[in-house]
Image (cartoon, rainbow over all chains, first blue to last red; front, side):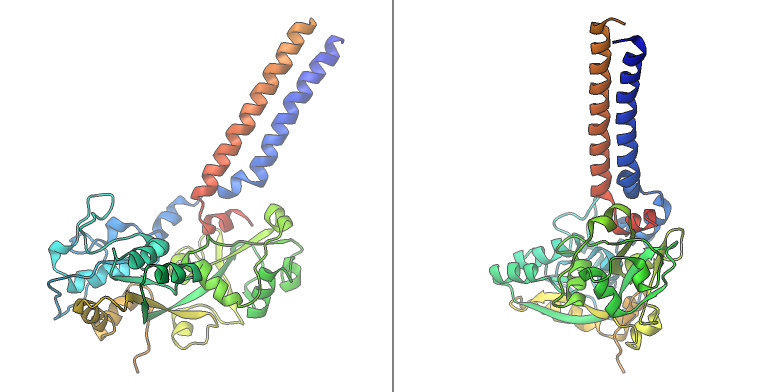
Length: 320
Length: 45
């Protein structure tokens, strides 16, 4: 083989690997890189920033005549609801009931933070007494039944389920039928629902997360599909609860969609006109006869408790 | 360039190329595990 052919072969092999790596980076890697860390940090829930009884805490504070004593219910719940239930503890628990070691709550703390999946498991296992979450999934209900736990769900506030697209997506509004069509595979291109001629990447969440359970409920009997073409080259659409997505909407990169022409703002959630708003719940085991559970829930449903719900960024229950 | 040297260079390029693919795959998988749906949508127009 001549020298020129040898150099050409070496160059071709080098270029082939380089091109392959660039293609992988362009198609996959770069979409997972968090270039929005400041915004993400602002939106994510920092446990230490919402500690009960911490003078520096950003927690909502209300005056309460009730202070629970004795067997205090252990609280747990969804990440997005943590600032709210930490504020409940701050309002009615004694200060020495919450223990935080700098990175997490210690096992003897009356407030815990393990997110939706962890909280439903903890409730079924008996390591949590009251959890604050969206409705349980079928799997979570089945696990609770296996453990002999009978879940009682008490609605304590309302929250919108929102659909999100990149801010550069020209679509601002979808109908409920169009969203169901997108996630069931009926619509595969944005041009079919008022957008441009690109494929739709209908992103789903992890099984058992509050958002995924809410989405499955939204879809009803329609099976959810995700197209490979959309995943490789399409514009994405996803879903979340308004609280979690709210602080990022309008920043560089993310946009909440109106549904049926109704924006997911507090007024439309409260009056029920936004089509996909739902309750979130205080959940406890009916077999748990700790009297403090009823007292705590009574406080949550009182004007002071609902004030915490509202000032934590959610929509309180309509009490009139 | 003699054949032995040429073969060694080709093998070295192939090994380095495979290592770069493996490293990029692992890096991508780690990013994927820690990526929120919001980041994904923000990155994907």
